[in-house]
Length: 251
Ligand code: PGA
Image (cartoon, rainbow, N blue to C red; front, side):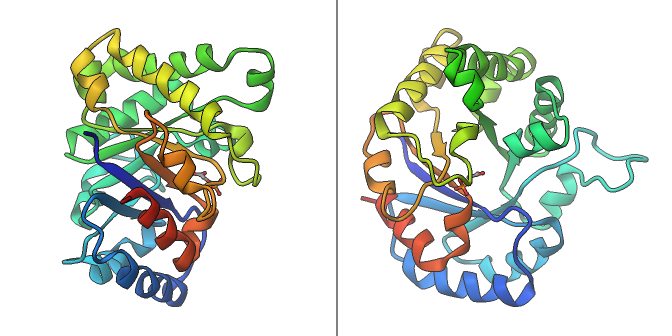
């Protein structure tokens, strides 16, 4: 059976005081959870703080982006090995906000994915369609293209070392969650697509759902056969909401 994972994506939110209060609120609530894993993905400057607060706890931490390059003259960029220096286990790769606002195409996302794997990080690799693409009936085509760009570079075995997150762009930060059936349909498609390369990898692949997951809808989403947890934006900034979501994953 695949383990469930709940990953918080703080995006560009927080500060020293808020982060500490948030983590102190989360830790007691997730302490006893044995059957699900929790991770928070913090902005770069706070990774040292998060490491200090989470070391030795059951909550892992990660970053939200990384450079495709190992080092060099890339002003403003952060490499995978730098993330490792601060104990990161995970890094979000190819979030739709990176793709849409910072022009990251699928080839760049694949190189970032590869850089993360090379450093021993687990990519949380995001795929998903826009509303226009869904309405045009292109959801599977878009998601397949995003997946194939990564498997083309690292193979199915490489993908198997990552977590896939299906995040329909129209559901992110909009309060408009995909229904469990809508999400399940795409998750099943993703698993089937991976199975075309490797049935073993497909069977073990963790596939998270992201897009307006809250304490009140997590349970029904996580009950679906191919949904292995969630990537949580807004609700990961509220300790009680995030704890409720982690508890739903552990059921
Ligand atoms: P949301 O964001 O939960 O606020 O919709 C999810 C994400 O962007 O990862």
